[in-house]
Length: 85
Image (cartoon, rainbow, N blue to C red; front, side):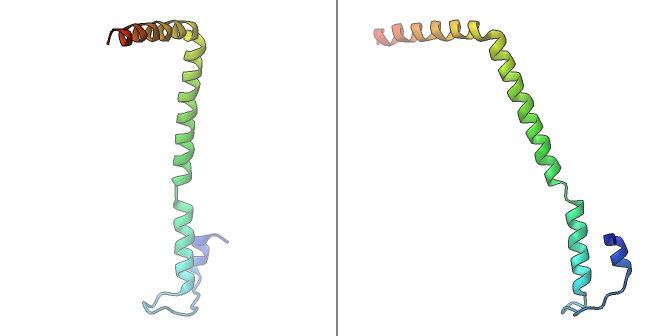
């Protein structure tokens, strides 16, 4: 039976101080759980992170040799600059 079907039935079980029944409180918590979308947001962030990772891997494979040359040149220039200090 769905939460809305349970809500329509009149269950008077152990009334709380505010006059609400425990059953209504349980139904409200079930409805809040069903309406919660935080899990979907986490999945979306995971997909975005996966896409960015895929783009980085593709860029490294495409420009890997050029990047190695750039970093080697930078390292050589930094060593020569450090020797002048």
